[in-house]
Length: 253
Image (cartoon, rainbow, N blue to C red; front, side, top):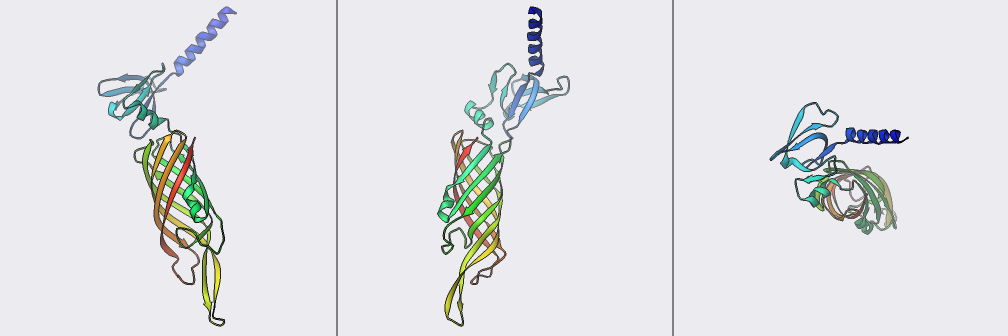
């Protein structure tokens, strides 16, 4: 029994040793290399790819490394420790509540997924309009009923406490114009709500501030074009330039 226990413990440590590996975290793209045989030199680091220990030996400049975590649990930082941890331990999922949209009678939330390199986010919004149909509210002359879409947010410097981002976005949904016309026979002004399909293409620019890991605040300005399949009586343009502004509160997990 005692011998069996000792053999089991030895096998367990053998398995751990075989599967142990180092991780090289890169600075520029935020990626991670699964490595072994890591050797840190004065201005560069050599390593082999994990699982191919006897294969090709690779070299990476120490200027391109954020940090290395070794199989024994130690960590070597190549930039400020707080910056390295922020760069690689960021939370990749954001639930955004768009506060400013309440001013224009929209309830809007969105989900954003930050990809592993920290430089690209894919965001999907869902917005529902509310309020009296006789009172138009919005950044253009279409009152929103419902829309969704997708935006690509590019973070040039990756994730961090304060970051700039920009990228294209599209919105598709339904809305209506509040418009009217004069009846030639009765000389009365007839008010109508004109239902329409809405498509928007926007270029977004924003700043996001993350004071703590689980919370972000962002300000976003957008400029683009809007297409509708129906027109107002007083405006025959199906395509026009539009803009928008948003202030968002985000929960990160």
